[in-house]
Image 1 (cartoon, rainbow, N blue to C red):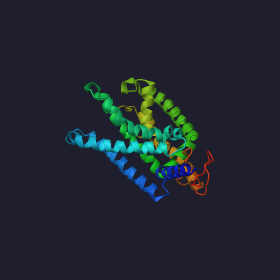
Image 2 (cartoon, rainbow, N blue to C red; image 1 turned 90 degrees about the vertical axis):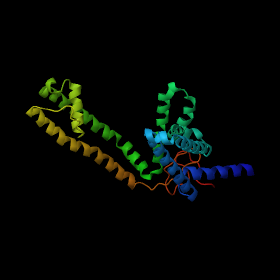
Image 3 (cartoon, rainbow, N blue to C red; image 1 turned 180 degrees about the vertical axis):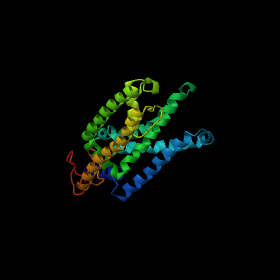
Image 4 (cartoon, helix red, strand yellow; image 1 turned 60 degrees about the vertical axis):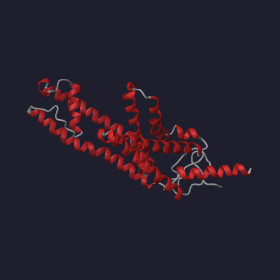
Length: 276
């Protein structure tokens, strides 16, 4: 009985350090991990610069192994600290953590010169580590929820934009014609989308007065189109901020997060959120 209690306490403390940021140890763990994530991202970027990589390849390799081992330990500890490991392994952050760790190990199996292209692709997978930063940006949760809540409105809006682009693209195909680069309706729709989004590559441009007039309307319309999804998401974001305050407490049984400050039990599995 005593051994079981000791094991539970040890596992609970490990969970609090790794998954939560309300304790000094948890905050320290997050800060150290953040430093290594940023260092790893910088390392990947520097390795892509040929003359820098040629001069410091040996040191880059050592640094990468140190970071990889650290992330491996973190990944294992996250699995150990939770009662239902599959909830973490197959979660969004679990998959990102796995993709962030595995490339260096996979590179051990690609030693020949014929695999250099594959090796380079595997090394670039390390850029997924930048996604590990998301769990440390508190407001990102509210933003993601706002985007999810707005998905229907945004989908309807994007459908309306595509309809407008198809109609105006077809009109431009009739007005300008192949001689000015509008060789087909799909290519004309491409021009309309580029113009609506205010990108304006300039590879296709109208030359007739009527075409230029239509293009002016599309340009002005583009500014309004950019503002609409921003307003939709902003409204949902404001609603998220009005909801009950949440903390960083994570359930040690199912890994569920986003619990209210006053919550004593997990709202998903009912497990206790403290060490009682």
